[in-house]
Image 1: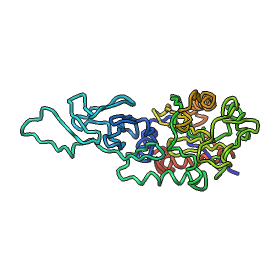
Image 2: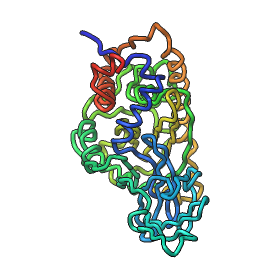
Image 3: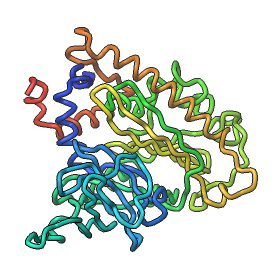
Length: 375
């Protein structure tokens, strides 16, 4: 059989390709930017770099979450510099004190002359499309985007064969029990490809394969519809010690109780489903050869509120796994500029499904023949 080939090496470091990805992929697809419960009060905001823009996501007085370009309409100053915070009752530009409502409408512009008239409706903040799904906030810079469900539901059906199986985990009703942020010195696509395959699991992840021994065979069930990975027979829970004791998620069936499911929701969300918790990785590119990952461990609110709640034994499994993954991704990044990788590499049998991600990138960024030829 002929092996599928990877993208050429320059796709993992070339600034021009990175800019094109930002414009055509991250700028046009729905991208996961944060959790809705991270903005509990009116005026709470987060900011994110996306598609060459900085986007401001803020909760309004009416409780709705909205997104805008983080730019004052007067002279272009950035309104909010911090990655998250509270704006208060209004968003005010620190340069000339133009103020905007939490719904983006221009409220005030001081010292406007008596003969000057401002179109307050027309000079509001530039809106960005936002949708909430399972408690997660997704934005797109596309002018007339298709609904978010049109992007998310097909890969869910591809993974599970149906939507109901995923829905049983009730992600929207879970809360963050622990969150860890990582900076990775590797191109974002290397991190995606690494998560998609388990060919590396036996040599890289002894702790993970102790709990999920089928991964030692190098097979990633992400490419097999409906297939989960079984727990080792002698463990009670997905913890570093193998100890159990935490209640299973309320919507699960008995057939779900000793299985792990992992998959990617394009372009930047890694989902890990487990019987008593869910782990989400939010990946964002920060440069041609760097990216950031925020990993959230989600539990039921009742579990988090339980006296003595301590998720450390659970968190350690993927914290160790994450750090092992970042190390091999960074090692791989060092080889991308080599002439030995000029034309790329290839995916062996257990990695063939990654070609679907490669094709997605090519389809979004440009015509495959033209892009691969150096357009």
